[in-house]
Image (cartoon, rainbow, N blue to C red):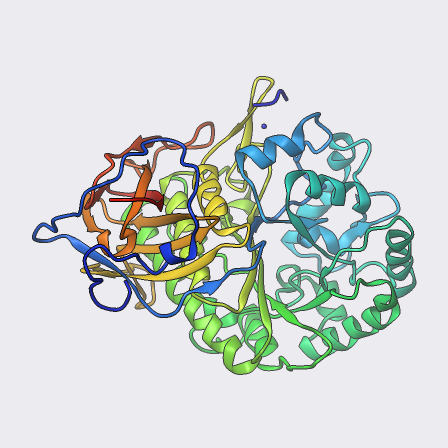
Length: 522
């Protein structure tokens, strides 16, 4: 700590190597180096098998949103090393999400005006803009942020300001970055204009529909594209309305979101679209931290991130073939509480929501970037860290994120895994959505394979993994366990339980388990 912060189709022949193991060339293990004998599968065990082809993941895939105007102590000595060690993201995001639409690059601060018909979101930003100056007396610039990412070992996605800054000013910003030797190669053209700052009159006037936004975004791009690197990629904003609505609501903000996606065009001058799949935590009653019906909160949120992701990605695949999808924000957010000033905190429900989201994203090769919201240090719901006295400490979902990031980032090969015997759980939300109680994914790189297993059941499960491990030498088996889904995790991480090095493996209820192995003799 620094001071002041995861079978071939059918059974494998005895003694043969698993699909993933054939990728590797050996690895130095960290502990528990003894090989494991062939397993005997007991009655009732779930059987894990590879399903479908494996694929190479991007070098960087999973990361976190990083709104630099908020509580992120990037000025602290050793901050980059702390983030690299305690989290290890593949992406950060500059200057953040909605804050980018009000960011003055010359001052490093927000400039939000109190306009007629201002939404609750605008009023929130108005309250924030002055305290931000005290929090960061010397704001971080893009070149400084780029060096920070280099030190962490990650990339970043950049958002120009298309709402409150003109084309000339944004072009000057890109020219300045070019002169200082660092222009980002992932450009996200503004943030969440589809929801228009939650029905803000001024934002709706500026961006009445997707077509007007697209045309304006292209004008900005034409002005500054000469400064972009040759491998630069541009993303326009989609909404992913089918994640939130099964049909066109017909009126209000939901109708606007629906029409936005229906109007999307597959133009060749941009390479990706963005969408933000926040599960509807605000509709479960009592707040996500202490819901009136925990089972309803838990099942509805997991069902939505599973089926909602699949609905959205099927829509994008049909509407925008060939385009990448960047999930540049998602995760820890409960809008009703946030805008009402009701404090929320991370608990076990959120650990499982965030864990399951990453499994859902892995299924879709079009998804080439995700940023969980967010890397902040105040200990509240949207935070991955907190302060205990002078100590910066990881909390809540950060342990699960670290395991997933370690397995998936850095050029991994992903193998989908079928869990035979998994139970389909019906979500208790307003829609008929469901999720499997147990899912798994296998990721390999540098001769080492990580099997990630998410058990969203309260019961422990016995899993046959022999058809995956083959002749590999299991070096580690451990689980992050949230026995109490409502336990507060705003000042700590859930406990990690060391599991026996054995096949089959028994995983605790409500847990994320990782089993790591390398090649070796049986």
